[in-house]
Image 1 (cartoon, each protein chain N blue to C red):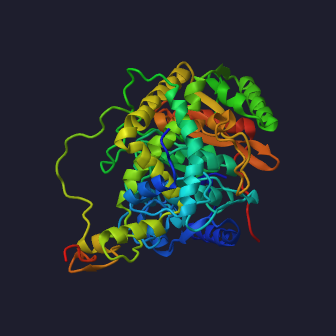
Image 2: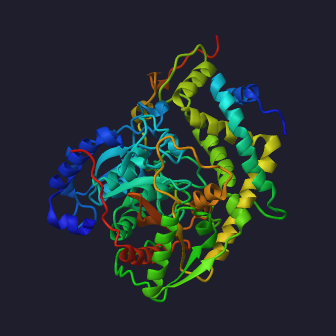
Image 3: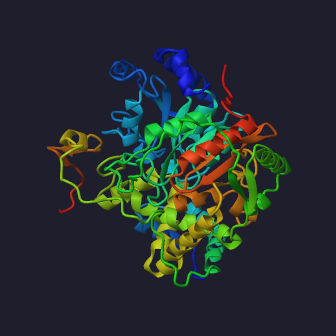
Length: 97
Length: 474
């Protein structure tokens, strides 16, 4: 198995846009053995020729419909939870300097 | 007393005041409520509701991942601690149209990801039968508010067994109907291919009535079913004669607690006396052992994608940063608990291109095999039963279970098969071990909820365990 150390998980967390403390990363390393052992149970199952199951029921439930307007959100409602907004725009730090 | 009888014997105001009194009385001990909801306008609005409506003036609770306009919806997470719903979930509309009065939003494991309710941003929820024990989760707050007598009905959600396990730990009924039976529109998702709306009641009659209120096609939820909603509560006799019911032998073998086994065996004997044919059903042991890792991979992978929009930029609690990356990173680090970040790491790990085939796609293939094995087990029987847990609610910090033991992998996780398969399933009280409730789980064929409630009503007659309440406080 590859080397799943603290640095590996800290880097992975960075890609997910959050940080792990040293202790949290070490905890994941410690628990990863159990997880990998559990995952190895999957390898014992023969899935040759089996199709992935994505949803419980595989019959289509959506159909073409008229494009009727309903459940409209006002701008005020859409912006109501924004940490910062101005003139109907979300405000954040400058992206282009 | 069921909801129909309650409506006849008291006024809406009396019912709501009593519920609020009990909720406030229990809150210092149970910590089950996240937000109390203003009931005044809802009570006023009853003048527009037919007094014959099924939930007329009945106080209820919503899990805190269900949107209710102008009310806080936190999903049990710090990152949504300030989020005010701007619209109603479809089920909120349906419940209010049926006359229900929402008195509170209930505590839950953060974003629904947990089975203990220990990860809620507002702290653990305590079990009314023993305050040193957990409620179970992720719908722990709702379960406890029904079990402690506050409300006769509460909404939960069930992605693994998040309604049916806390129902077992709290001595009440927990229903997870077929996938697509209840709309999920307006509910914070966890893992979309496994998420179900579920609910808690204290008797089977109310459970059947509630599904009539909640079920039905909703164009806002593409997975919502067109299959006709039945009158589940009508002619609910509980007659078990002629029923053929299987018990899952693998699950029973994995249970070590002799008291649980004795109660279960006694129930089977009584079912036979009541006219049911009860047969032993073997499922594929390797597939049962694979349920938990399969669930872990699928659920965490879907969750990682679903929650990528929680970044503090457009809504939620924002932390300071010098650029967007820093703001997102700081907001997600401060906003998510340790367990959630761990699960996102595992989910992302499974989705890496180099891991997708051997983990994510492999899990989806194993899921199909597990579901096929369940349908084989259900073939020829009306339903399957097994104890919902091998023990009563654990102590808050109990981590004694070996996560690779069959006791853990099979006995404590088998209910996930109904999330994989979309089959309707419910947990109801089986009995008590050392004063702690333990439930029995029932699984039926897809969209055969009517039959499920019929069988459950029969089991309820045999156990005599309906309307169980453990009040807490003064």
